[in-house]
Length: 370
Image (cartoon, rainbow, N blue to C red; front, top):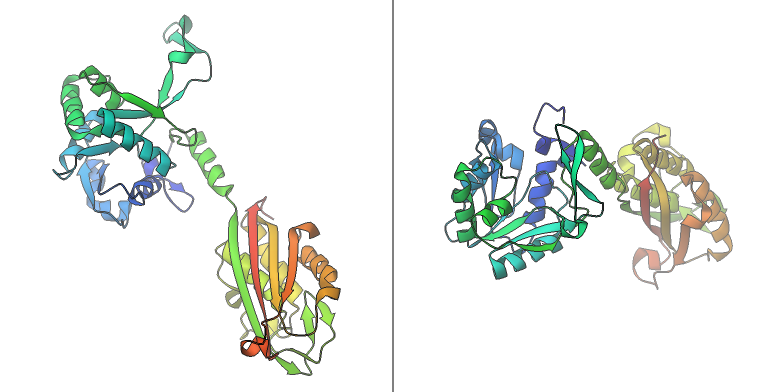
């Protein structure tokens, strides 16, 4: 990996590869407890490396070989545990469904390994000469993954058998050689193992491709002599919202949703009413700045939906203008922007016509930084 720390401790979407792997099991309802096997020189800092877990989590110092580390981890497991899963900490995307399949099959058969059938023609190559020795039957070749599941007695037998074996690459191989039958369950293509810098980069891209969702809310008291402005569109009305800026609830709610979606705080943090720069500031300008903040962080607005809650006047005649103005501020297509209007049926201050409110939802998609 050309890294200064083990690959399992590298950052992956704001946490480490290891913590993502742990979290999958910590959240699984059929997992009772865990043991994390670390290099001996990292055990003293295990609490900060592993982080907080909901389930009991023991720590064991690993050995020179994989089977040594598994044996030491097994020894640290409570004696009443009868089914054990062994998982590569470098596989951070294991799913709950895969964990279920391995548990069910291992409980039935004693040992189970997830695997994917080979898709390509497989060649047996002489590594020294760089020539093909044979072409193997593709339908008989499966690519093993983890977690691998075992009844405790089977795994104990396997690691004991592996004490003098130097070429074992996983626990299933040891179980096979110890005379146990190992069942296969369907693995998952997303259950990748991070081995190279390219693997890590691909994993980071996969996480970044997940859209972000944010919600926003804004409310202002209505008063005579104030102008009702929504997305910069002036709405004829007897009363308008009171605020430090133009009190544009549509833009403020959407800006808050954008900041929430990209984990950038809230609108008050970016445009505090204690700052004279934002006195009478146009809501569409603030919204444009919020969208720019998202773009600086690598996100673009994929869709925006806002609901205005107002007793009167009716907003239907202004909807198209509002949507087009919002699309411009958000730098997105108008067909990605939805605006709805509701009344509050006479309930509370909004229902009595004393206030105006807006609720917003924004979806951000990965995009090039601005």
